[in-house]
Image (cartoon, rainbow, N blue to C red):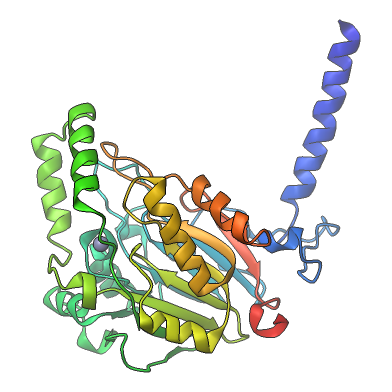
Amino acid sequence: MRRAATTAIALAGVLSVLAATAQARPFNDPRAERIPAIEADAAFASQPRDPACHTSTLASTGGALPAKPSTLAIRWTGFANFELSYKGQIMLLDAYFDRGSLLPPLGFKAADVTRANVILIGHGHHDHMSDAASVGIRTGATIVGAPLTTAKLLSQSVDPQKIRTASGRESLVLDFGAFKVEPILGRHGDPPRTLVDAFDAALRATAPKPTEQQLAEFAAIRSRGVQDPRVVTEGTLAYLITLDNGFRIMYRDSGGSVTDFEKAAMERTGWVDVALVAVSASYLNTETVPRALEHVRAYKPDVYIPAHHDAAYNNLWRATEPLFQAVKDENPAIVTVSKGYREPVCFNTEHNVGRTR
Ligand SMILES: [Zn+2]
């Protein structure tokens, strides 16, 4: 009995040392496990940890920006929101932060976002842009969107000088210093009606009903987005983001099918380092998996980070594991990452597909 206890204590000691070593890594570029070229400096535990890569405070709400100019920190903040921080710049992808009491809290409010240089809005539905105007006005960030999105921003008192409108059909590269951004016409998801109706009915029958107050709160949030049916075909943009050293990110905030515009862009580009892609809203894995495979085949990312998989309390989170398994069955080298709200993933961008392929 005593020996077992001693062994357990010794084992706990070893595990805590291992955990401390793992935490000491200044970078957590998930590819470092497989690619020795990525600086993982695990051996240099004496190096100061970069707070940007180890705390859950967003750079845009006053947290640290990456200390090294080559470090990119990516944080997911619910639905298809991401924060990218790199070389002293902050880019927000979508802006839907004050989600109301029907959804799990993100740990910060739109009013806490005080720093951002650029905001890219994938499409104008409220769950992608409801806080874009207020955050844009407070931070002075430039906001990029499709015509339907930016028309809404203009109606919300955003300075026209701070707005860039893109159809995604033209060849346009926006230069934001450390970031270059190419808006590409995507397509919104369009889940099969019969499937959605069946799930909605089941959820209504089994989940707690929203209160009158919650419904009013939801209506107010929804009014800060676009409800035009044209969002599906002409209001959804994918963004190809290229850092000054060639590191590439594809961002897509809705799980629709890949368009010819995206195919053409990827034909020119080849691969991306990271794909940040919304999971299809079609609930069933028989629907979400083929769509995720379609995205991954088109963008050819080294690292796949899904989005839009969380949900309101009275709805369902979309499972990411079936997607991860399917993409790995097809490409065992792909790295899949899904973190909690605000948890950083840091990349050493000196290692990137532009240089290594
Ligand atoms: Zn939408």
